[in-house]
Image (cartoon, rainbow, N blue to C red; front, side):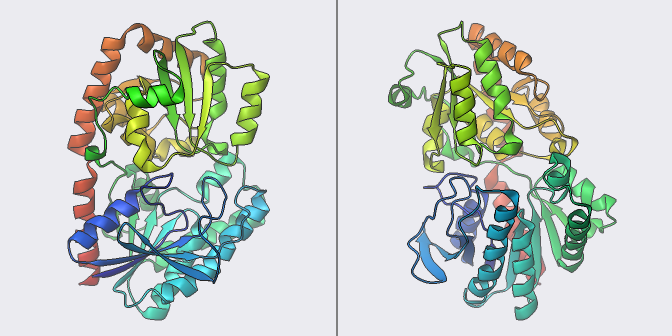
Length: 405
């Protein structure tokens, strides 16, 4: 089979971010299929251009995968308006890149941002090929719930676009069971929806490693390290972590590590300065290949999102990484991902936005390292059994074969 994926935020193992699509592509290529990725030349996390700009589309080889980097206007970390302009610029150039990818059997688009899904539909329509639409987050529902999208006319247009794409897709792929329920509530036939959840390649992580070299590199040898690894954006509620750190200023052995980048990083660093936090370190973006060492150096890992109803539907990638690394998860997100942690008995749930409860949970694990290690081991056992990306890649191949047939 020959698959083209249009994914603005695609990253390989040497970049920061989730590598689900990279791992799927590598698996497919090992099975003899051909995969081309159309991606942006702007990093989704840092907002910086990632390739030399000499033409509209630049071809790259990423660990054996053909990646076509399409020109994108560099405004991802500016206002909402300019962010949309950046998305729209990629929507246009990615159509041209998709048509240049070579022969294709299936065209896959992924949302958000939803505009790149329009590109994938258009490429599939022009080439008369099946269109697979993957829903990674519910847009525009998330934007409306967060208060980012307020204008009634824009909301109406966004929802019409969403329904248009659902109707035009040959098949819909979701990564959370709650997204499947959302689509069923929109009267989309169950046979048109496949769930392949977010997960992790457990072989990437060394659960028995103590991460000593990484601890020394961070200057945190001998500390109890509570790590957040992921985007520093509006939705991620890093402010709650900083307030929890403030509450634990009198515990010099406890340190918070914020690993990642994003639109809010500068504001968060200013907040840490205002609070005079000497127990917080911002490391900046780290490549996916570095995450096993970073998590090995951690004693506990934190996942936070703002307390809005729609975020109860999501399966954050970072949580599965934490579990695969055999580290206990301090989860300030309610909903379906809480069900995973509860089923695994792999961490502690705290109410979203409750910095007092988060600080208490960190302190509890600090005082009981045996319990923390046991949670981590149970979490890894559970994720290996139920959220193993090797199995997910096999299911993805089967789905593509069915679509081609």
